[in-house]
Amino acid sequence: MGSDLVLGLHDCRALARREMRHVFRHIDGLLTSLILPILLLLMFTYLFGGGLGQSLPDGQTYLDYVTPGILIMAICYCASTTAARVSTDWSTGFVERLRSMPIVRPAFLVSHIMAALVRNIGSILVALGVAVLLGYRSQGNLGDNVSAVAILVAFAVALTSLAVLIGVIASSPDAASTYTMLLMILPFFSGAFVPLSTIPGPLRIVCQYQPMNVVWTAVRDLFNGLTTPAILGALTWCVGLTIGCLVISSVVFTRKTPSG
Image 1 (cartoon, one colour):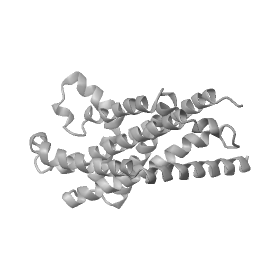
Image 2: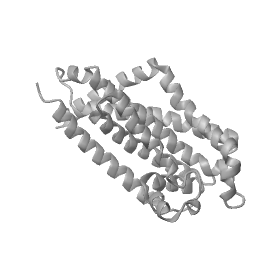
Image 3: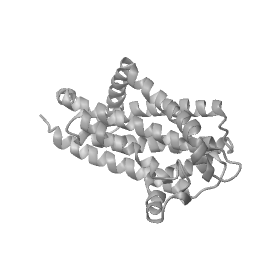
């Protein structure tokens, strides 16, 4: 049992290194994942902030309000890249080649999550750094800030697990990208860019309880130094989505790659 676990971890690490080499070999994709959150932050702060910020309470700047939402958007973009990469490995025959190797099968799925997590952490840190340069200041203490980043990382793992599932079942890399790009619409159906109080009644209920709004609320409150019950909801969504997607992905992967 112990030796199988060691071999599995070794396979995950080897495949994750392969994926990271691909990321740095195609530097345009990496730069896009780092630059896109910056552009969104600048656009919402300086183009839309004047109008959208009018609905905020007195004393709160739109930069402070929108920054957690931009971090969520950055994670969504990285998920779309992961789904396309997983589907590409299917379409190019890489997964078929793995069948002839003594590799633990879930390692293929986990390696993509590991590589995506590195990209997500880089994207989150870059976006936070630019927000600070623009004037964003967290009101929480060190523990609050660490907890907020931890929830973002947990959300990145959950959304990447969903992206891996989409990549496994998609018919092509283009289809996988299309499906996951829909994830980038979901943050707009939340309180990440405008207060929920400005959204009409029935739609407001949907926006309030969808996963991204729960995660955004927890992150925002922690950065603001507030005690929030949304933390439990955010962690529940993240853990449930991660486990559910990994289980389904493993089942689909096993069925699509029968033992030769």
